[in-house]
Length: 417
Ligand SMILES: Cc1cc2nc3c(=O)[nH]c(=O)nc-3n(C[C@H](O)[C@H](O)[C@H](O)COP(=O)(O)OP(=O)(O)OC[C@H]3O[C@@H](n4cnc5c(N)ncnc54)[C@H](O)[C@@H]3O)c2cc1C
Picture 1 (cartoon, rainbow, N blue to C red):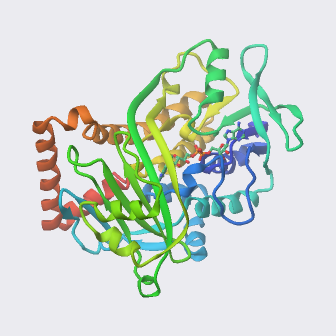
Picture 2: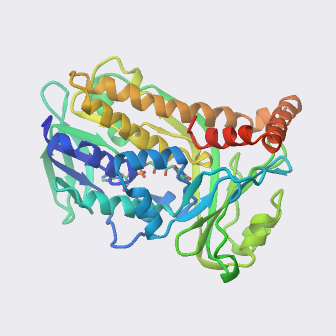
Picture 3: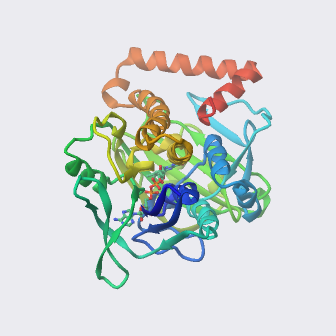
């Protein structure tokens, strides 16, 4: 055993996966969340993105399967939609659809709460892991040498408690409250890489009509940089439902009124999403989400070696969600943690943080390079917009002509290369 007690702040995808990865190395793991996990998948206040499109990339599914063997088949068994890459997945960009060609690759489509619930069920079965809901962690506590020694929390009855631990894993998400406190105590500022993305999601769920239930799809309509700021995506999820998000860039907000929202879906560069939803039955209200910037806290650049604290998931990095990379990066961080824990040397921090940073970097490079094309100042430059368009069209032509090139584009977008 490396640790007697480990505390995890947050039971989102990152916290739950980290609990599973660290459980063999300690006597007990306690995961605290300010929310209550219901018995059924449901949208939580602490994870508002749960209401929106949440694509699990193929690399993320592989990561999850490594961390929780058998999760893929239990997701399928419980009702995730099986979507064939190449035929079920359709991307529209610059007036063209990606080719329809079987690629021997299957994606799983499900809502975020459904995925989290499947992971939660697995983690609940681990003997030395306890999940404590309705407990808001208020602050970290520190020992005599600035090492993190535990937390202060507000329990379900509103009382404050101090709880000691050998290690605190911060999986509290993008807010970074504890990272800030930890950095102040360490006496070293964490460098922040940031990019302005100004993205808005506006999402609705639909029951599918009976004649389309056998068809499992994942449709993405990308706006043309410089021409439009509105794109859309539709994904098949569990229980024969569609989750459909319209997204606005450059701070453009898609409407909350369903009639206007549908009109906007119809006005996308192609009507395929609108054709589907005009046959579906709306479930509930439209939900919105605003994400002004992408953030990467460069824990990997700290000179000092922190003790008793490890960040994971969005606490480290959070990019434009349009690329669907967040959960893959988060599970990649946990894989890095698993490898670092298996090392016999005493360099857990360095071994872990460098491994985690390489996942963040992969996502950051791709998302930021692409996002730059949509920044208003740049995309209004007609020369740059023309180059971007011709590159994208050349890539599409190649994908149409050459099955291997097509597969490569898909593998790249799935973070598999
Ligand atoms: C609109 C949107 C769409 C997205 N779409 C995708 C997608 O398609 N594919 C994808 O892979 N990723 C997507 N992401 C990113 C993805 O949601 C995140 O990368 C992922 O959720 C990170 O997991 P996490 O566990 O680090 O953090 P979170 O999921 O944010 O979990 C943090 C947890 O900590 C808890 N918590 C916070 N503070 C406290 C506290 N003080 N005390 C106790 N508990 C606390 C919260 O309640 C929550 O349960 C999207 C994000 C957004 C915003």
